Length: 441
Ligand code: S3P
Image 1: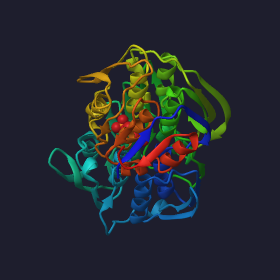
Image 2 (image 1 turned 90 degrees about the vertical axis):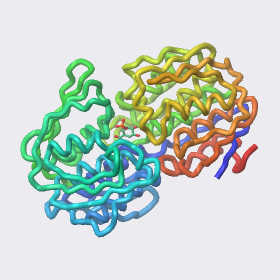
Image 3 (image 1 turned 90 degrees about the horizontal axis):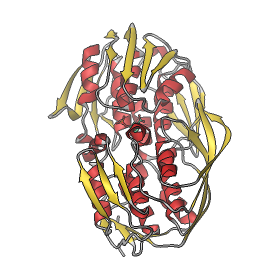
Image 4 (image 1 turned 60 degrees about the vertical axis):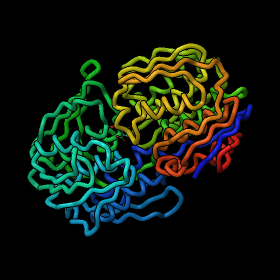
């Protein structure tokens, strides 16, 4: 499924941001555990999220689509999860699989977790090790990867844990296990990561305490608390909106408004980094949803310059480095990314995938262990390359955005993975004026 993005001189328009992927997973999971029926609207109907819905149904929740982005979930409540009679298939999703390992851990059931080739290569030891400390047993593939079978238990032990990596998936997995453990589970993260689990657990009626200690963040949850069904409006996804924002910023004539986006300091690093590079980002408060502030954001063409991206922004823009690399390639001067070694274990090795994406399009870039250094083309990215997406949706979308403002078209080898997180991406980009066509240039 090759696609090509041909250069255009204008990217303009107003769009509603697609539902946030992280909040969509959590809405289905918490709704599926709660007592009663939750009504969810604005759900992202991407493959990753749909897989989480199927998994909750296999574990006993009733999960029904009642309209576009509208879902009704009747949770298992106090009767608990049932042993699934199928494998739990998470497709491409690290979030779905890692959060659900924590959920299954707290019930006396056995379940087999499987996923696609990319997910089956990703490390699960980061969640299996703390879960084992809490009392679960498991049999995993070599290197603690999927496929794996986990046996949970009803008498999990609460733990105090300091994850070695900045990871919201690890934090969330342990908190979800902690919800069913004996005692108080505490996660101390040395740098705060996205906090949607904490906010949404509170929304579903659990008490979760959060104490900031400088850059560190300490989250505690008492076991045995019950969740109650909620009405949830999923806020717009700042990670998906970043592609539209970047397309406007690098366009000769760019002017894009994205409505209904989540404003959360644990997710807005890309917008802060883009501002450091000279972008003008406007924001207007428009209400709230799922415990988050909502904003309409506006973006326009900018004279971008390179920058050293502050390391403390890394966790709040961890999914945005491929698209930041496109801004860096377009900018004048050098951009340096450091402290982002977690990119090596995403849907692909995103450091090497980003470096290849830029190189095949004539951009000078140096790969480092924990990041990359880009020599910007000052508005004149050569383009003309065929980018290997490595089954990574964010690489595929970044390359297509790059093609909108390159001198020659940019092609990708495979667009199919875009459906995991942003099924309307092609359509949205075309609405804004991008010239995207199937096939190679
Ligand atoms: C996510 C956490 C991040 C992020 C992923 C979504 C989440 O992963 O990359 O896309 O919803 O908790 P890590 O926890 O591995 O950093």
